Image 1 (cartoon, one colour):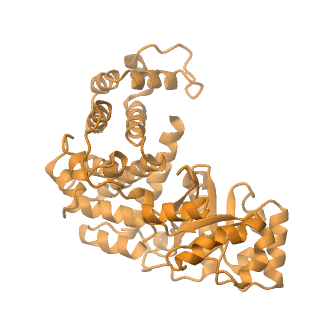
Image 2 (image 1 turned 120 degrees about the vertical axis):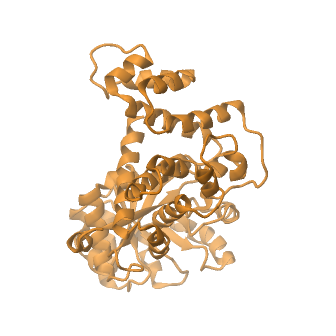
Length: 411
């Protein structure tokens, strides 16, 4: 359990992906929770926005949270009128002007000044006919909540705003149907978890290559894997072997001699880096039919589940890593989860968790997924019965962000 002092200064930050027309990550909106004991973000908006900036820029590092992509940050009126330009460069962020900010001369002037300095602004939860239209000359994006905005109104906005040269971002897009509807209407950015839902509900035959990747991925992540086991597994796939050798021989590793074998590579850089690289490449090979964010999200869940499990005595952290890693297999393979994991060497408990059963593995996975979506109250309530507290979840998620950044950067 975190101490009271630690809890008071802890920053709870999650992120929600914003995808482009190619379903690649354009940026992340940073989500914030103020205190471990809050059921939601109940603090004043100025503290919330300021803590996001402090936590993202100083504690975690903005690049760690966003992977070098755009950070969409909510700013309240005082922060908007203050000196945001002294904290972060314009190319790193998109400033979201909240819908509850009164649009007066001071706000308009602040937005004009930020626009002139190269900052991009997004009008959050935009409502047609509102005072926010006065900010059109300085706005790069308009965010439309497709759940609260009537669909005909949402569909008409791209054509209405075309003369202003403003990009349209549909937020709270949680189904494929809504994504396609807004895409046809003319939206170019999409925020929500629609890409995490399976498109098909009937089993399809897996290709021999994908089945091989599945088995290799599971084998690579078994506990206490010996060096000889890693060498044998990587050698099974020629493309993996070549990628490992290229990585070890790259400028990232100041090795003075050429490395010509997997055994030599393992000797020089160790088991863990190569096991992680191979896992990333296997996962990427599975997710060719979906957005690349799926692989990143699966890795993030895996590591967060593993870290959260370190305080539990009744489950193996390595098993929870696999549960998180395979939690999006049904989406990646466009097949029901039961069929996707049928031939994998997973424990009965892991299979039960992945197919929706109730056990400790599933509880931790659900809490991690809720945390990543910023559903703080649900995450804390879900995790409480297995003695995973708010501080543990926060540490697991931020630790996973750092780990994923390190792993993906290396490959």
